[in-house]
Image 1: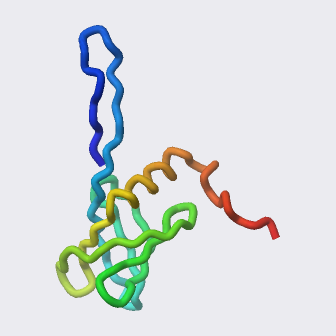
Image 2 (image 1 turned 90 degrees about the horizontal axis):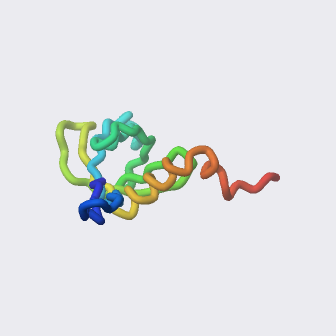
Length: 109
């Protein structure tokens, strides 16, 4: 995520806007098709599951699923995945909303 500054005129209030460009996630395997991934930009951790092919399926704090694409392999059990800009924006909005965002769609049954 990158911050862009607009309205940079003398005497005018400067406004910052978030630009989402995606992020890399460093992942380590539990050797059972699950693992832990860390957003390298903010050190946020996510639990993920490997999907056959080159994707991982991860869960946000409030239970939303998102997928990231394989980018590179370090060692057996360690790899980097790229999560796109739309995913980064969704996770940012979730973090800004805090607890009010959690479990919004859960049925009270």
